Image (cartoon, rainbow, N blue to C red; front, side, top):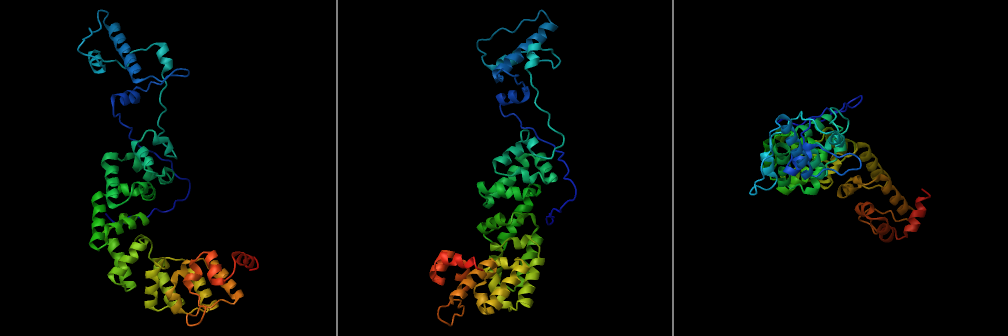
Length: 392
């Protein structure tokens, strides 16, 4: 199969679901009677038990035959034949046109009709084995019903032939029971994929020395990964290895940590590489070092990157080679960096040169909680820090 196409936004009102459902088949005689009999007692009475339905049906059968043939006699009781099966075998078939008594008629409550079209899957859950089992797995139908084509697909599929085999495949891949609901809510389209194609894509990743545990982690973090063709996956891996000039192992580690690189757009990645090289002035080997430590730098917001670099490099006077050693600063909220730097400047402790005493690394500046920052770096109380922030 080719690469999966993304769903595009639609304008105007969302179309109603025109759904085809598969009713839940009866799995036992009792279930069958309760399901197909559709005899619900009216107000003030109790719901008929299966045995009551049999007795009522037997009375109707006898009445029908007696009306047609007054000479008819009920079959003699066979002491060897006890139970429901032998009694039903001896009775003539019941005509659907056989009249019933007025008392029986008022006790019958018909099941509500299934709506031919609806904007919600709630109207179909009681009638669909597929939906009921997906709900038990933790699938959020309210998100799936926003896509009418997907909702119709789930109702048309056969659970045993179409859905069950995909669930077993995902389980074998390493997706746990408590993760299936979240995964299927995001990638319900996987049920439209051919199982052999899915296995082929997994086999390709295994051939590239991704372990089974790696693939399971990648699929959990990038649910649409297996919806892309082998050709697409191969092209993406080749792009990152060539563009970043990484070794095969480093390319594989990069993808395992951020598998969305295989499924998302390449435009932000290409743009950020240009930003690091042309606007921020990092060398090629420095870019390699930073993204292997923090892969999200490849997909980060361009404005956030440039603002963070401008403050750290031009205001805090931290050179490129130190930023390269601690790229976590690009993954930190800028206001947090500003607040701590201003407090240290106020205390006379803003010293970021490793060659001088009282050196403060960028890593510790941005990664530790306020309590430790105040106690070990600022040498002040948290209350003093909070009072200072009110003046900023």
